Length: 193
Image (cartoon, rainbow, N blue to C red; front, side, top):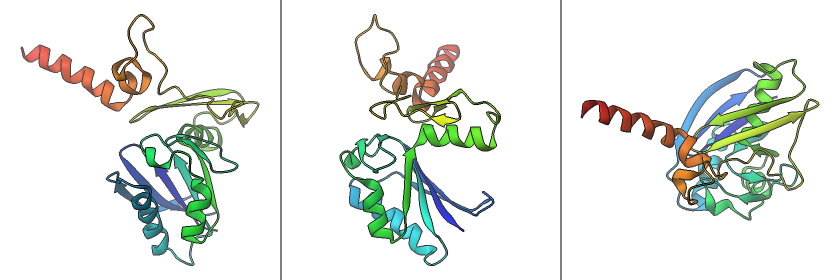
């Protein structure tokens, strides 16, 4: 069994083929230059068409809040045009194969619990610093989605309650990749004078 695995992150969609033994091959990346949902879906369909007849499904790690059972995206994240869309159904219909979808933070947690440093730990928290900040909670060896599927959604949590809400005062802006590299840029600039 071969699965087309996709990681739709803020800066790009990374992809690879995963076989039944969880070996990854044929890695690739599509930069996030999408302005519409159609562009996003067609980019994924183009990758899937390369493997037509050789993949049994798609597994999508997505940078937004969603219901993994239905595929409904509540918050499209870096791909805001997907908000309110059943992305699982849309991609399945377009690509002709079953689709599984989960938030990127939860996918990272599953990977760590099954094959990484959290193997053997039934309760854990995983934090991923990317374009935004993904967080996932595992309790009793199961992902905890919460009552509204927002468990671990920390990107827009306020960093300093004494300050006004703004991009520099939420986890994604302050602690995501751009926020952290911005700190180093300012420090380097100050050292140079």
